Image (cartoon, rainbow, N blue to C red; front, side):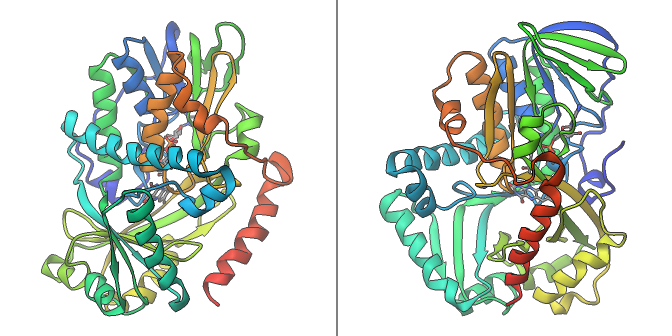
Length: 422
Ligand SMILES: Cc1cc2nc3c(=O)[nH]c(=O)nc-3n(C[C@H](O)[C@H](O)[C@H](O)COP(=O)(O)OP(=O)(O)OC[C@H]3O[C@@H](n4cnc5c(N)ncnc54)[C@H](O)[C@@H]3O)c2cc1C
């Protein structure tokens, strides 16, 4: 399949195609999936001199990596208070440091490989309930005090309204070190960098089987690759290759629209050009694009089918925040599948000697999947210490296993989504 009809697909700056796998091949590392996880792993492995073959079922960046909100957050998906409670101060600190490295890795790769992906600094958090503001401000102070993180500034109700052109929120914070980017152009930039380093990338090459063993084999309809190691990097699109991953990494669909270009009117909405994320369980998130649109995400579904009218589905959420945009044309609307875990922390595992899996970034994948690729490359080079920080985190299966996890999750998620409206 070609890219989803999105703002990203229309404005991508690289339309090169790569050939499908044909015949037998052999390499050091075979990678299943061409999103940020797979592409970052390919790049970091190739830079270490490994012979890499990556197989993408559709086109590079076709999955969540080419469709997402483009927001780059600080920290893990769970806050430091929770991580300290779960794992103790030392491990929580490691996870914070790795999240900081994830963000720095994204920025470093963009700079080092001159990836043209509209990077812009700044991410605002907007609290949709008055009772959340004090805790949000206290958390910003805590990060400054205990984690030496000086980039969060607090915003009262009026300051926030001025920063985002909406009075729908009660206060919030601004993270000057977070930011946003063009999701697909970032993925395609990673692909170019990986190829320049020597990785071989194939499109339209869905992997149908992984044969485990001393030298695992991945098979497609038109070829097979034998490797010393295999990485499963299919995330929310992984299906039928590893029950263990699929029981713990759960697909969720999320939806985005892009308005028409707003010209100078964009400054009424986000004068500082930041990305914005709110405090709902099913988050509203938005940002200006380089050509002056508002790209707005909101609404989730939990079965494989997308709503018939995605534009209408997301537009009602947009108008909750910006009723003044009722007259504006919606040029694009699309959906994508991400993946969550029960603890909302990534699931990274060495499943067997020479078989690795990584996914379930729970909405933080722009930075975390990029880092995962780097940690996978380290682990394959027997530098396992940092990969093991994640490998050691217990990860529960979704209740009901692979068959029943969807209905169980729908019940749980619907309950939390309802709470957003209370
Ligand atoms: C609508 C939406 C908004 C989001 N917003 C944000 C955001 O603002 N910030 C943020 O940090 N994160 C966000 N995310 C999450 C983020 O996009 C993901 O965490 C990240 O892209 C995951 O990258 P990945 O490479 O692991 O998976 P993907 O990008 O999904 O890539 C997996 C690839 O594997 C391929 N594949 C699967 N099975 C096979 C097979 N058998 N053979 C070959 N190839 C296969 C798929 O075709 C796919 O291209 C969002 C996600 C969505 C869907």
